[in-house]
Length: 327
Image 1 (cartoon, one colour):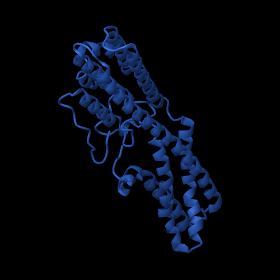
Image 2: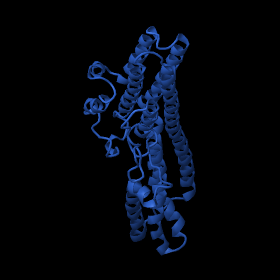
Image 3: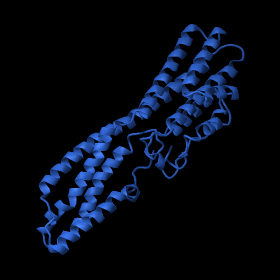
Image 4: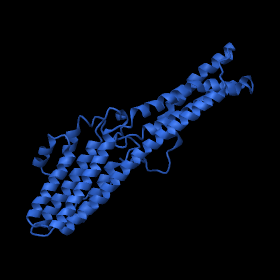
């Protein structure tokens, strides 16, 4: 996620310049044919503008829908933040009995392990995602190195035996919550807290399952391909006609004005494809690209809060932005 006040113009143009360049080349060919052969290749601008209005409305629909997916993902992780803090506070307040500090540490560390497993799972590649354009700090081959990277981080929070049990399973995060629930039941049976407080813990576990399931729904169900594909092809069709309509507009101003067709056509084509690309790159808020929900940074914030409640030492620092981006 980019956190500075604005994207710079050249930064924006840098990752969206191809439509402008190809639009300029295409418009130059059309204009040269018109100018040097005197073949009238112009078309009335009015019907082309009607197509443009329809495409703009469609792109607006796609962008709104894509934004809804990103904003929902951020709200889900906001819920995880709040519920995690509540869970940690409950662990620190409700547990009573001999050796309570050890059990508090176990439960809180296992919750951090759940956050770690969940964010790793959400960053696994899907066929419809922009996996070749991940932030460099997120390994583009994360699918192949998933267990190795996860192993390195998870062993800070749970035992080797527990991780080995999870490693052969398809949904590690879900199993960690199941283990957390059974462990809380064991501690209840040992009278470290009463039934009412056990129910409070179970309600929080349920909320974590809900937030995980909501995140997985966004991750595993792509923005419907019929909408995503149609917006791309409509923008392409409109762009094909733009230089012909521009010739119609500029030709009536004088012979030399026809060359203004090239930059103006390139600009219009770039604007429409820029809108399409913004929607396209907002569809998948967990894919690991520059406009994602920064789940690694959020998870680190939760870890810091929980370990500070625990009174832990050697607490990691918050993840710092790199060139204005947090992951």
